[in-house]
Length: 343
Image (cartoon, rainbow, N blue to C red; front, side, top):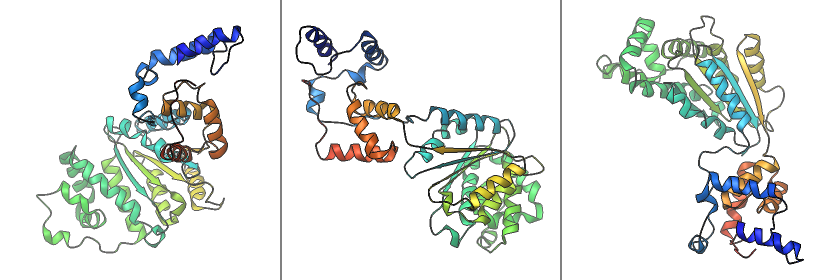
């Protein structure tokens, strides 16, 4: 394709017919640069064409989110030095909020941190605290495979006679004490606890299990469905006056589904008043350049070749990544995307 376009440059001078002739050496240099960086992507033979169209997006790549990736990574780095922080991400459905957060998972695990997640839904308000409790309950299983003896001793020292309260709230704590917890004690799991007791018990738990060496990353997705009771727990932990908690809280929400008086914004204000470092981010659609790069990768064609297609996709989807993926898949499924080595 590159050779053909170079020949078209010569035809242009002779008044010949043009398809994708290079307009300048600068444009040619950009294609050569991409070819040298990833020859397997941009060099394919006739056999590849006969196998049909494939959409080959780069695995794990977040298109057009470099700045946002840097912000959330920097925030976590500050947490790993011993201070809790909050990070809120708003945006339309499909804008890539969850993917941005997930891009941090490997970094958190690499430094010994625990990543736990809960996704709210329309039914969450019926049991407002169950999601947050479930997220912390998962942490117990992660501890089992790492520093179980050390954490188990600290929990035993911290809770003492109140240990049954912790077991009732977080049943998975039992995996940290296989030699101490009898079947009779496990029967108590599920007994009702009031919100204040839940809040204080979780705070004590986080103080013990989190540290600069083992920070907790709590990711709550779709917070537009969250109840104020659950958010009060988050505020209590993050604004811990003892300063011994080490938690990175990340909350995402659909900003087109919340009003200015939503509990999310009340939580943000309260955290800021409590001097908790809080970052607010809103994800818009991809711009035309980033979208063009995404389509270029998917089709294994130089960006200049697929710019006309990416411009149409931008008009149709406003750059929403999920809508772009669905649109491209639809074009492929209907046989509307085909390679043509002659054009």
